[in-house]
Amino acid sequence: MKAVRFYAPQDIRYEDVEITPPKAGEVVVQIKAALTCGTDVKTYRRGHPVLIKKVPSGFGHEFSGVIYQLGKGVENFNVGDRVVAANSAPCGKCFYCKHEEYNLCENLDLLNGAYAEYITVPARIVSKNLLKIPNHLSFEQAAFCEPLANVVHGVDRTDIKPNQSIGIIGIGPIGLMFARLAKLKGARVIVAGRNELKLKLAKEFAHVDEIIDLKKYPNPEAIFRNFSDENKGLDIAVECVGLPEIWERIYSCVRPGGTVHFFGGCKSGSTINLDTTKMHYGDIKLISVFHHTPQYFREALKLIASGEIEVEKLITERLSLQDVEYAMKQHIDGKVVKCLITP
Image 1 (cartoon, rainbow, N blue to C red):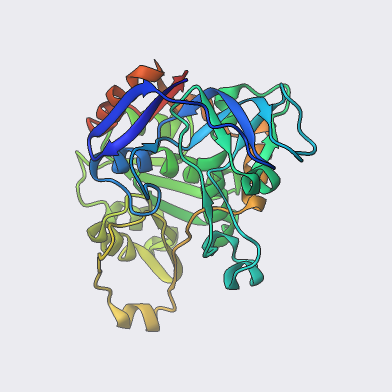
Image 2: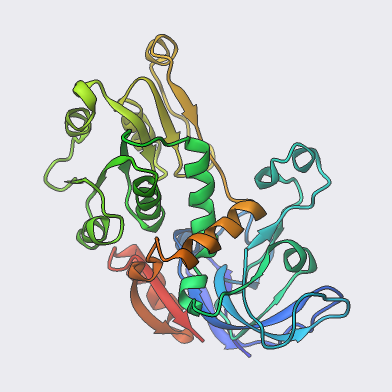
């Protein structure tokens, strides 16, 4: 098959690779749609200690397709089934799984290799996180299940209520989906970003109430405060960038009794400074939600199937498999939100 493999930071190669035959419990999926992701862009630029454990490695992790081959013992699936798989599955046996904190599983079975014509899905993911796609859904829509599952998890844990004021800094695909789900919860949503393409999608995709263009208003704190009830500060402030300095700024935007959600993951070793007096006497709740679980992966597919989240609007360029490196550079230059890769 043809595949794009990761060799080193900024060294990915489009080449011929043998299809890995399925072992017991595994399936081979012919990929029909793969999506680019911010995590892939970070990996392309500097590698990834968790996702890339050895090189060369498969690359990409958001995909959907058709079952091409079944390993021994696979039940409930047939060759030709339209499916979508998560990029991980918990073990169900470790300390965290016993506490039903499946996103923190110590033995997450991870899957890379979506930028290819075929992918072999491990048995644990087949049994826990491989889902059939409803007939009315396209492959490109279904491929959004993995990133949306992260957002569904984050929104659920944030406990959003109708009419709450929610401010989001960072409107990449994750921030945009977070904003859309918050609107579906009945919240009033204001977002801040600087990319013209993403600012446009904040209105057309997420249907937010107000938008701050950070190129014009580089200090959005006052606007966030004016958007809130009685100018007290936001009920919920969400960081979807993953920069320590933005973590600190979003913290200043929340009202006493409010919630700050640090949703964007920062570089390893990052630290921040927070006003402990404001935190303690302001009764502020701080949360930071990571990854997804089988429950949220299923909820994501149901949401997409419902038609309430038009995820396909986030696709800004459609490319072939040999164009993956071009797609990474388009992301770095801020020219795309999501690229659809069709092998």
